Every structure is written in structure tokens, then in C-alpha cells.
Image 1 (cartoon, rainbow over the protein chains, first blue to last red):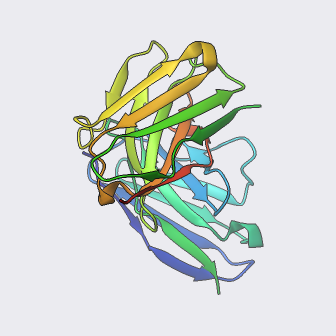
Image 2 (image 1 turned 90 degrees about the vertical axis):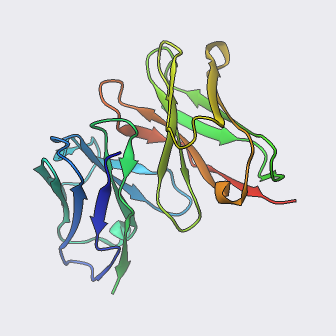
Image 3 (image 1 turned 180 degrees about the vertical axis):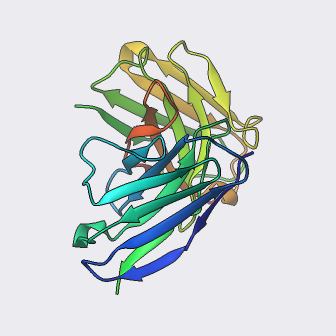
Length: 107
Length: 118
């Protein structure tokens, strides 16, 4: 199975700041990587797929980069609604696997 | 619009079988694949399996011996059955639709919490 190592597991930041979340795959997954946002009481939201392609409706302050084994989710100019848990997911091969999550909290 | 909604009992006795339903709207099960993903409270997401547009299935090998996914296309419903439930199966269970070209999830249900207890 492809192991996805996500870091940090916890991140505190203030509105207006930028944050970076890392996701590393245990083998090359090309760009078969998605990022999701999870909030209590809401359906999980797809933010980015193919490593860097924004899903329709995702604000432009979100961006994804990387390929192979190393990926980064960047959120610039944090808005209050961005404080949530973020997960990466590889879909290069089955079983599909997720990172362990990054909880982004308001500082 | 696209919607997925999970339903089923919130409480299952140890060693019994979990049965969940995912009712979808806004798309056809013969055009999009539907997956099941679960999340133990406070933990990460685990992919369980998928029913493909043609009706075949694939399962996570860690759960394969206990898991069955099926569907009723006329009712736009996907079913999950997992037997021999134990406390480690306590989780929120989600159904999700994939993109149909690639296996990332563009729509998710809100999830259903399942507890295992006598």
C-alpha cells in the first residue's frame, strides 16, 4: 500500500497569514493526489486534484504543488472559514490511501 | 444537484453485521463509481471499497473478508454490509462519488456514525 505521510498534524495561524501543509508518498504517485477540507457537520470538500488543479469553486488562495512523492498544499491570506482539517489522498493505485490529516486552528 | 446520503443503524452489537445505505441523487450509478470511506472518531480516513459503474466491486484487502458492497440502480442506492463488527469498527461511515475518470472524490455524503456496543 502507498503510505501517505502528512505534516504537520497541527498548525496554528492567524487570519491573513499563509500556511503550508506537506504530504509525502512512500512511492512515486505521479500527480495522482487530491486535497480535501473537512469541517464538523459538513460534507468533506474536494479542494484540489491532480496535485495542483483547483476544483470548481475552490478559492484561488488555495494552491497545490508537487509531483512524484512530495506535495504541498498552500493557503495564502487565511480566511476565518479556512480553519478546518485537511487531508491528502493518493489515487495512483488501490487501495486508495489518505494522509493522517492536518488540523488548522486559529492562533 | 448531486447529493449522497448515508443511512443505517447507529448502534450494532459486537459480532453482528452492519448494514448501511447510500442514497444518491443528481447522477446515475451507471455513470459514476461510488466508494465507502470510514473514519474512526478523531482519526484519519480509510478507504473501504468501491462499486464500479458496471456493478463490479473492489475492496480494501484489510476488510475484504468481512465487506460486501452492492447496489440497486432503480432506487439509486448503494449498500454496504460488513460482518463480525468489533469495537475497532466504531467510526463515521461515508459514501462518496468519484470523478469517473479518476479516483478522487468530488462529492461526499455527510456520514453516519456507527457505534459497536452490547
